[in-house]
Image (cartoon, rainbow, N blue to C red; front, side):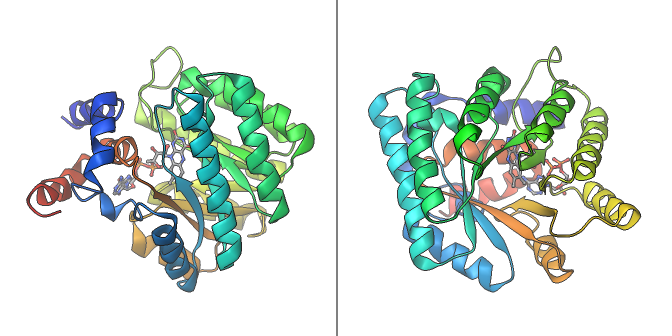
Length: 305
Ligand code: FDA
C-alpha cells in the first residue's frame, strides 16, 4: 500500500500541468508546513528564526520544469537576489539549487554561464552553493558540470544519492577532488537498472557512503530524518573520533523539528533546508511520497488553507 502511495505522489510530482496551475494557487493543502513562504523576505524571516534557535540553514528558491532561456535567467536572478539578501541580513545560511532551474535541459553552456554568475556572487559574500541532485537522467551531466566549475570555484558541492549503484564510485572520485558532499537516500523514482529497489539495500549503501566519506576527511553533510542513520553517524564519531567540524546533519524545513533542535543542543551542526517560492508543487509532492502519513495534513488543508 505504501509503495502504491509513493508511486502515486511521485507521478503527481512530475505532472507539468498541475505544477503550472499550482503556481497560481499560492501555498495550498498544508504546503506552508514544509515551504517557508513565497517571497525572499518570508524566507529570510524564517531563516532568522531558525538561526536564533541554533540551527543553520540552506535556502532553496524552488523551481522546476524550466524550458526557456528567460525562465532560466529569471531563476538565476532569483538565486543571486537570495545570496544578496542572505548577506544583507547576515543570516547563517548557504544556497541550494537545481541545475535544471538554470537551464540544464536547454543547453549545458547556458547552465554553466548561469552557475558561474551565481558562484561569483557567492564568492563575493564568502558563501557556499550546493547543487541538489535530481533524477538519474541528469546525474552524469550534473557531475560533469560540477567538475568543470570546480576548476575555478571551490565553494560549490553537490548531493549524492545512496539508492544509485554508481554512487560509491562517484563518492570515491569526488573525494579525490575533496568535494563537500551532501549524502542522501534519494528522492526520485528510478529504474532497478540504476538504483537499489529495496529500502534495506539503500539504507546499507547509505551507511557505506557515510563511512567512506567521513574516513576520507572531506566535509560531509548527512541529510536524513532517519534515527537509525543518525545513530550510526554518532557511533562512527565515537569509534573513530571524527571532529564535529568535519560533518553536519541536514533535515528539511518542517520535518522532525524536535530532532533538529535536539541535535543542535547536543552540539552538532544542524542545517535546515528551507525551500521557498511559488513553484512549491513538485517539492511538496515528493515530500508526500516519502511519507504518505503526511496526507492527513493535505486533507486538512483541503478544508482550510
Ligand atoms: P526515510 O525516508 O527512510 O525516513 C526515515 C524516517 O524519517 C521516517 O520513518 C519518518 O519518521 C521520517 N520522515 C522521512 N520523511 C519524512 C517526511 N516527509 N515527513 C515526516 N517524516 C519523515 N534527495 C535527492 O534525490 N536529491 C537531493 O539533492 C536531496 N537533497 C536533500 C536535502 C536534505 C536536507 C534532505 C533532508 C533530503 C534531501 N533529499 C534529496 C531527499 C532524500 O533523498 C530522501 O528522499 C529524504 O530525506 C527521505 O529519506 P530519509 O533519509 O529522511 O529516510
